[in-house]
Length: 134
Image 1 (cartoon, rainbow, N blue to C red):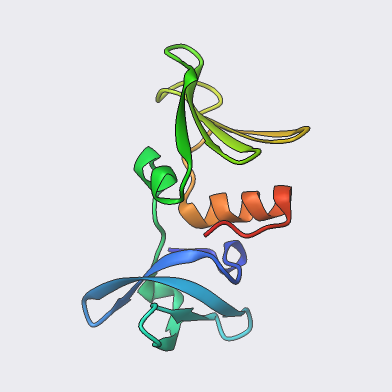
Image 2 (tube, rainbow, N blue to C red):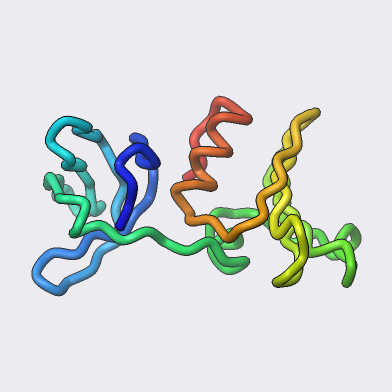
């Protein structure tokens, strides 16, 4: 289950209503009612309980969907694969390597030992750049 404190406006999640799953963007978080207002892109905005939200696991394909590009020149077998979007980069190491991910923006580097979700990457990106990742 998703922790409500990990969700912020602009984060991307999957909604589940009546067995139908749709990708959506969080518009508002109600911490007291434990509900989240999500827009699914087709002018539908609904409040969802946390039980009806699913996170999107971060994968290299997800990074490519977010318009990161793979930097072949900076990617090495032992040094991980580098994905770049402007001045922000994600270095993805092989499973079992510590750290698993390194997020880098200008003079700040964050090393993450565990897999993260798309909304967690969006929150790191926003905290490091002051811009939202869509």
